Length: 234
Image 1 (tube, helix red, strand yellow):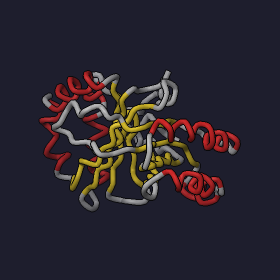
Image 2: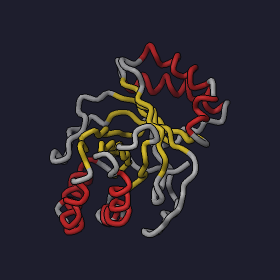
Image 3: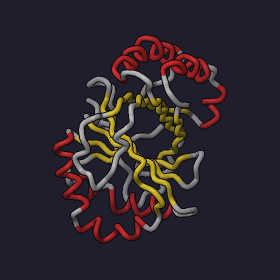
Image 4: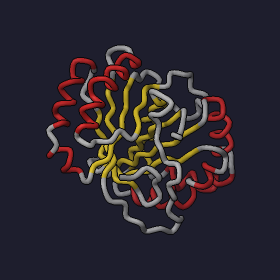
């Protein structure tokens, strides 16, 4: 069973040198406190190509429960106690894509994955690659084409699709946290042994050529190193 019907992909731009400080605070205070109100902290990452970017994934069962759960968390004691320490690390936290799986089976499968303890110094090896296509046409048609034309080639070369999503266009049910409401994207995730694996594999260039005529801008490619307590890891 996959998690979750609604997913936020959140990219935070931080003040120089503040990323580890935010991650330490986040993993100590903001994981269990969010999950206790019903959300799922799916993944937390260091962006390997931007030392001042923290990326994370948060999941919900639906847009209605999202509103209630966010209200409980951001109105609660844990956030109020630590929000100043978190906010002081950030330049921008509004780069947020609201997503939904393209099928009931294309969400993240983190069932049975054990989260490391609060004080864990675990080092997660490998890289998660998130590829964001900004679409010029219908997302459902693109997803169908991707599944028919691209996914089989990925499977042939043992490149797993960990999750595949399109924009969730439901109105933002918690306006206090902005999302990119003008977005029309297809996002998929895979795992790599390391950053260099992408450059070594010629399929990456082949996929780029296949999608180039169907997107309106260069893809966003996020090479992500999972933090100690991330459920989604390579």
